[in-house]
Amino acid sequence: MFNLILFGPPGSGKGTQSEKLIAKYGLKHLSTGDIFRSEISNQTELGLKAKSYMDAGQLVPDAVTIGMVDKVINANKGVNGFLFDGFPRTKAQAEALDELLKGHGTEINVVLALDVPENELIQRMIGRAKTSGRSDDADPEVQQKRIAVYRNETLAVADHYRTFNKVVQLNGLGSIDDIFASLCQEIDSRK
Image (cartoon, rainbow, N blue to C red; front, side, top):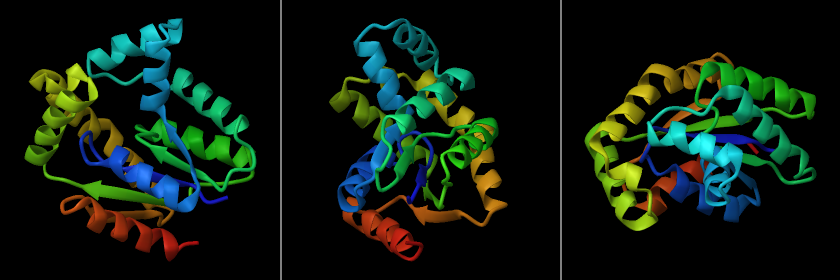
């Protein structure tokens, strides 16, 4: 099983690249954002709770998130691997994910980190708000809060995986196809 984390700040292109990587490598996409949005659209208790955190630009509590990830892994035994998109977002989540995967007899093979300047991130979030129905992406206060949470909490995830020599920094600017080719080159060198 080959597991990777696609890493980067909000608006770095993780969702776009995830779709292409999943199609090429036959990985199971595991995006906590997608899981939360599904729960929100179904108006479940978890979805409404997640929405209140997301609308405020905050992270959903770890215990809820890790439990949902375990449920998805258990429901998808026998896949080629998982592509973790936007998760883990904190060092505690990374450590919990490592333990969870170890219990399933696997691990994270590589963390592919997309680097994108902040002004470009904001432009991408504004564009995403217009096309995806995510109105929260258009709110400058929420944008800044998400970027601050990424810097203050999520960057620690990369530091965690650097201790295992699993992080590769990649330029997140350029054409979608050029970025995809860079990601594939890194994956192919590790398979």
